Length: 512
Ligand SMILES: Cc1cc2nc3c(=O)[nH]c(=O)nc-3n(C[C@H](O)[C@H](O)[C@H](O)COP(=O)(O)OP(=O)(O)OC[C@H]3O[C@@H](n4cnc5c(N)ncnc54)[C@H](O)[C@@H]3O)c2cc1C
Image 1 (tube, protein in one colour):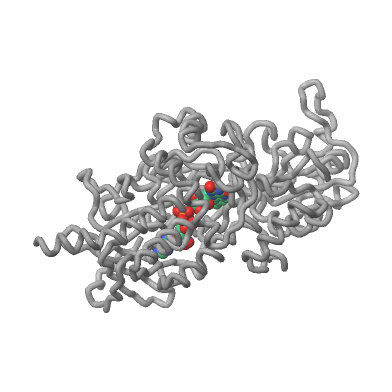
Image 2 (tube, protein in one colour):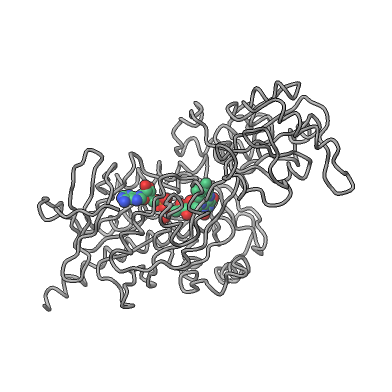
């Protein structure tokens, strides 16, 4: 990341707390700090709030929620703590159990807080090995987080600066006192904070440099679901003396359908409370055929294909129309080395018929809905190809006819005894392009239980806090719904601690 050396020439905006990054953790930190009567500036490099939080499926695992209670489920954070150990599996010995304790002890209050800001959830849903249903899903989708929490930021008086990227931390006498920023028009600004700076800039799934450093060259070559997750804020923490823990742990490569080039009309509707309540009501009351088009309009965006399609006999071909892998193995890592880094899922009439109805789904948003083939036909025409013949299908996919025909006919001679299902007659359906992505990285700055960034000497760096993925601190977040949980829990706590830090700073100044 480029460094500024003209920082001293810039006039500074004074405030109490600067939060860097307007995703789940950053918005939570800003709202919380502002609720302690602090003047808060929230810096977001993009033109809108959200980050990976707005890309997520929107699952949050939590205990003792109103939804659990309504279903008579008696749960406890201790049980959640133990189940996270099971979920961590072989990685359990790398977990930061002190941070895990903070997470499980705060999920009830976090859900209450999210709901108090207008977020609406359905659930809880089962996810083994959780001993009880804990997974809650936001409605209508995860863009509700920036919609509702962005509104809460403005209501709380947070000074939200969009299109403002943090590029350097300002330090004075060993204490972090502010942030220098750069706007797209080249304008450099400085923000100084009495209480401190909260780093909440997400992960580095889109940083080839950091993935090469912490994971591997193969990982560096993979695309990220969120191309904005550039790790620049983790980099700021490293430059200040911080250390990344569990930098090699990433989620991926996993296959996902490419995002739509144009948002549907439904997805352009604001994901506000009315919309969420309408969807919640329809999920509970309307027959499936009525709620389906509505729910699916929101959901069939960046979801992953179910491996059950391959079990049923679907094949994967590349842009040359050629098969390149054992579909029942682990095809995800092989997609990036194919032409244009894409693949297509091809199925015959019989498989297509199956995946039009339960229990055969193309993809799922846990607890909200399962998307079948017709949902993709209706909502994702850009990745849905259907044709009566192999050659027409090849044309629709823009792949060579001869190769695709050979790939499909070759499977007709498959040895059924080996467990592979041969493809049969058309009409044929193909879904794609799919790509392999890194969904997120789990390396985060080492932090204390007060979410202070730990420096190279092992002591907290004065005035510097971190939350969410940036401040993950070695916490293992396996299963679904723990990353968002950590973003909101740690964001609020880091924001509160930065707000309260002002008293300590004033006392220190008086004593010096
Ligand atoms: C497709 C997908 C599905 C997922 N589904 C789930 C799920 O269902 N449940 C779950 O628990 N987790 C899920 N996750 C993970 C979860 O979304 C993230 O771990 C979580 O949202 C991280 O929140 P955050 O606030 O730390 O980071 P983010 O939400 O990424 O926010 C970071 C913000 O910082 C900004 N920023 C970065 N650098 C700078 C800079 N230099 N200056 C200013 N701003 C900067 C970014 O633009 C961004 O807005 C999913 C992730 C993806 C990608």
